[in-house]
Length: 211
Image (cartoon, rainbow, N blue to C red):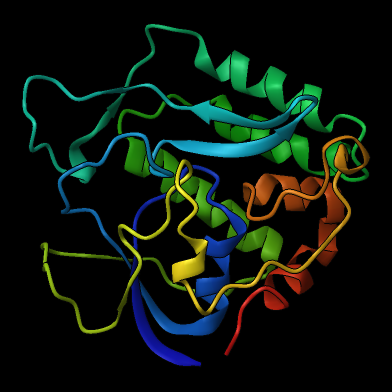
């Protein structure tokens, strides 16, 4: 096990994200950074019928360009929850474990969260249950540009292939629902792994990091 690392918050984070909770002794979740848009903080990538599909949580940034992640609020101007759940159904309703896990997800979406970080932290706690991860959630108390530990706050991005810069991550294969159509797609949302492998998901995560 390595000592510590810093991670951003994540909306149904990628598999790479969850390898860190099994690799490091202590994880710090950054909440005092200036919020970065178009990142895993408010989006995830799933495997839809036509390949990679992004699901985005709309947020309210207001007039400030320097709003902190902890202060980002969720917009409900659009019915994005219904759209996300329909997209998950379309992508995974034929997957082996969709029916087993979808009720847990529905319970989360029945709640109305004010802040993105509260929503994402409850998602993280649910994923801990699924993956049998016994870990405390440690939130940062201020922002430090240089940290005492490995820094992944800006090195996980849904649009740019930055995985090559993470020498501790190597995606282990598993069977995906549309793999015969579009091939294997690595490092999708943890939801793709859960729906397709169920209780074996933890093993795939364990096999996806390099010590």
